[in-house]
Amino acid sequence: MNALIEAVRAGKVNEFSSEVIKVYASSLTQVGDTTLLMVRTTEGKKLIVVGSGELFDQLQGEVVDGEKVAPLTHENRLIINQFLPHTAPQAFGTQVATMGLGDRLGIASPGHIQTIRGKDIRPVLAQQSIRELALTGRTYEDVLDAAAYAVLQEGYTDGYGADGDHLKKEEDIEYALRLGFTMLTLDCSENIDNTIESMSEAEIAAKYEQLPASLRSRYEERYLQTAPNVPGATLAYTAEALKKDVLIYDAAINFMEAIYRKYIVTLDRAVDFEISIDETATPTSPEAHYLVANELRDRGVVIFSMAPRFCGEFQKGIDYIGDIAQFERELASHAAIAVHFEYKLSIHSGSDKFSVFPLIGQYTNGLFHIKTAGTNWLEAVRVVAKVNPTLYRRMHQYALDHFVEATAYYHVTTDISAIAPLSNVTDAQLPDYMEENNARQLLHITYGLLLQAKNEDGSRTFADEFFQTLADQEDTFAEGLRHHIGRHLELLGK
Ligand SMILES: [Zn+2]
Image 1 (cartoon, rainbow, N blue to C red):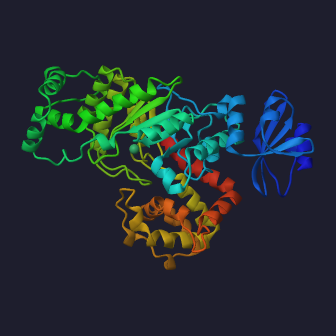
Image 2: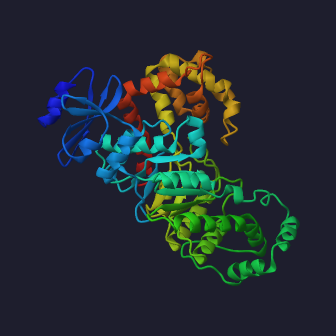
Image 3: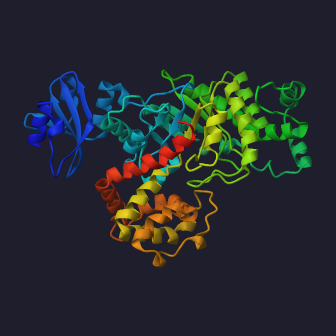
């Protein structure tokens, strides 16, 4: 350690080499008279803090040879944020494409940054839902800490966002905003009535008649008597479809407005406010999208992006399922509506939708928000399959045994019987599972169960060995992410 500190003092970090300490050369940062360098020791990642000044004084760490070796704690992260603003999350607004790169493990962001650096798109590195926090046993503090330290490690100064993803409850919104999250994805699914979609026309008409007359006539005037004019969108309202849309979305629109007034308008900083109406059983027609957007505009609600539920299926970790011609037609309208109302179209569960990426890039003119679906976890599993076959086999078997439990959280059409039995597969073939849709989904949706699994003595069944394997193989993992996410960006035209 002393030799390393000497190298930092002398400005010769590149000449330092060691069997036990790995230096992240891109992390070398000067703040006044303080020099920061991130390294990995046998005890994990540390910051070497050399020099003097306020940043040096404030960072907590062990004093070695008159300098400091600081742990990557939450408290130290907050201090670094103050001195290096690019290590704190920021809002991006609507004039640049953005990509949500949620990192469930807290170790994928370096690879994500390497993929996106220098491209015409900005990363939302911290992106987790409350469900993901529960399934991984993490907190929003952990998520932000991991993203900020990854930015420091990579020396990435172009800015990143932090998305409180799919939030439904006010307490969760308050929690995320209090910690400095810069994007809020409001999940309106609990205010969307999914029973309407399957009702008969007569049932819909009867339910619609129960709404206040003034509300009905307002909607009818705005959508039936005036034809919406959105260049590039095909919108045709019928009385029947309008009744349905009003019944499905009116309560949700009230919810969006209430949250906006209470939390977004009153905030003393910018937040990218996204409306999500995707996680429902009801696909969003272009007419429904326009109605929601137009009502929000009328009420003065300004949004960053909207995530409709597209036709077909956007399942986790596999390509688009559905009629691509219909998708293209509706996408053209959805994108035109977003342009008309000056926000970005948001595409959720966007991992692996290779067959529709070129269309998304084209119709949005490259201005979109796309959320990946945590497939960095699958890339991590791929690394394990390559270098630690016994661990992979144990995880695979556990996932098979607990698959039904996991489907409570995710909608997938996985055919377990189509997955090649482990006993027929050689160690060298194990990574091939990551190329097969059913096995991908099996491993994808069981991530929470695998990470949280405990032995009878309370020790973790897989997690410790899993994280150690990935720490040993971090360059292989980052390379896999560059390949996987890089392919997304290429097809999206970035
Ligand atoms: Zn979603």
